[in-house]
Every structure is written in structure tokens, then in C-alpha cells.
Image (cartoon, rainbow, N blue to C red; front, side, top):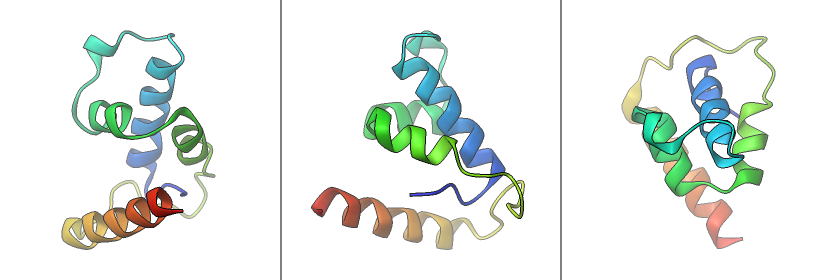
Length: 79
């Protein structure tokens, strides 16, 4: 699943570096910490590799963002 914003992409990149052992897990905070716990290395790599072009810095409507992320995550897990 591609990142919806630059902030999400950055958080996925930080979580991916921790997953690969380049950063300690204890230093993770916020979104990167939850991504580390809930996503595989393959999912993190896909989210972190999303192109920056056309992405907002942050998603303004957090309720919409959480709902769409949950739908994508549940469909990815079910597959």
C-alpha cells in the first residue's frame, strides 16, 4: 500500500530501518513505532518507496486517513 503523505512515508522509512537493524527499536516514537509493530518488512518497504511527488506533507482529515488505512490494512491481511 502506498503512503498517503510525506509524513507517513518518512515514518515508514524510519520503521523500516529499525526492522533491518540500522536503528534501535527503543528510539522509535509515534507512527513509526506502531508501524514497526504492525507491518512486515515488505509492507514497510513498499510504503517507504512511494514517490514524494504530489503527496501532501500531512493528511488534513485524520478520520478519513485512519478509516482508509484500516480498510487497506484489513484487505491486505485478508489476502
